[in-house]
Image (cartoon, rainbow over all chains, first blue to last red):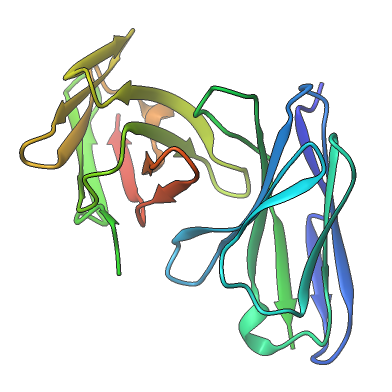
Length: 112
Length: 110
């Protein structure tokens, strides 16, 4: 029973393309997140949504647009992909009044 | 500007011995600290946490110590097992988001 799932697991695409990564959680959590793990292995938060509303946007380029159709889903759409977007993207979720976040398996994006 | 630092990129320990992973932070507003474990090609999994009002939290083989005056926390694993070999991330919360360190690779040799 997967708690936080992401699709696809791997994504290889060319510069300039537009791509989406999907995330779903079945934990009943209200808050969902997107993180980027770059080549230096730092996990950095990009966005956070609570009950479908954006609550954190950490100076991410406008080419990145999260969308939350319901509180169980948080998708990430990326326009005009650049080489520097190559990274592993993790989705996570948490419940109210707790600090622990539960992560998905990650999506490795490679832009060529 | 790294607010959470894990200065040891890697650590190698013999099976059965103690593993000690360290983490330093700079932001006094952090009020909760967590450790995550990550295997290759998987997402981080929550391991143990500690509130800033405590100085120790124990869960089985895992103990986290917090020294607020030194802005330092550590994770002790005893006894270490080969299955503990993974990347360990320290994370700190300011009540709004988690800030992660770069991780420490732990290798437990059998």
